[in-house]
Length: 221
Ligand code: CA
Image: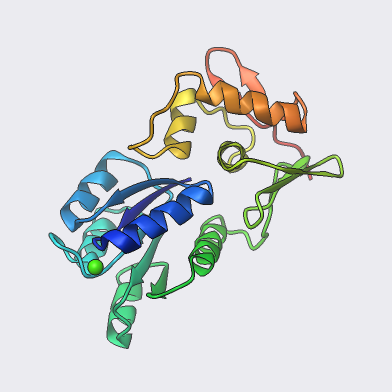
């Protein structure tokens, strides 16, 4: 999953980036409202974490323009402004949730998972294709009654495929979901991760469609 973090405070931005990275998210961090708007035009994000007090465009203005442009991606406002009026305004402008600083990163990650569940129209806390189960809270994978611990990147790749069982994703599509724009990606990084996942969970977990990409099969649960 790819996150756009819009935060002008360096210390907070670094702390949140690191926490998201550790939790297997690809993170693009911008510190200005104008840059945020350009990033949203160029890249596809799964969620925007939006500070309100920003240089360039104010966060509420970014949110307003984004919804005006018909962008439906989830927005979680993360700000020190705890005035009730700002909260109401943010939610009415189309924010999905609101978190007031200071907060524990654990709460931020839990709220993000809740936003993704609502977006998926699914109250289930785990993801599954009927054979393989993945828990976004613990990053544990379960297959044939066994539980497996995945690395952050392995989790990110499997999570991306499990969002759409049966859909074939290309190398570029997978890289976009797993790596942020400041990260070096080795040319065989995706193959390497898939090899590692197959070694843990079994070779049939991820199917390769030659010349097109990879998928997890859709099973009836
Ligand atoms: Ca700020």
